Length: 126
Image 1: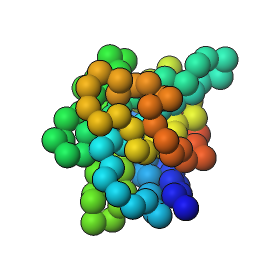
Image 2 (image 1 turned 90 degrees about the vertical axis):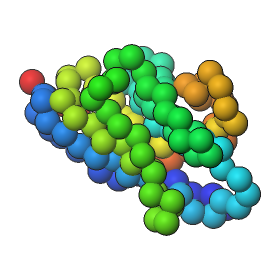
Image 3 (image 1 turned 30 degrees about the vertical axis):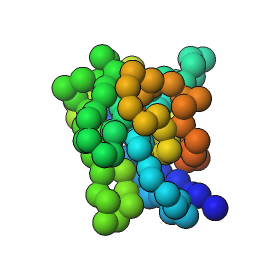
């Protein structure tokens, strides 16, 4: 059984930083992509960043480009999201997702990902 466990969320002032982690276990086979999504109150879930594992390509939402970085430590089976220069509009529940699209432009389609974590809250105050 596949499990994704996120950690690293919390409360921070605007301009601060957080690093989210997602440990994946129980997966067998070839994993092509992993990503981070978020859902703010009253809004739909949106793609934040995706990492294509074989080629190393990364994709980011325009709203986080230059501030967030997605990365992976394969030895630790862990996906990261480094978030810098946080803004109030980054406040949301952040979800780790795995076994996503093989390649291409559907990096932010949540229905392309098979496995999901439980989510971790990120709150950015003024």
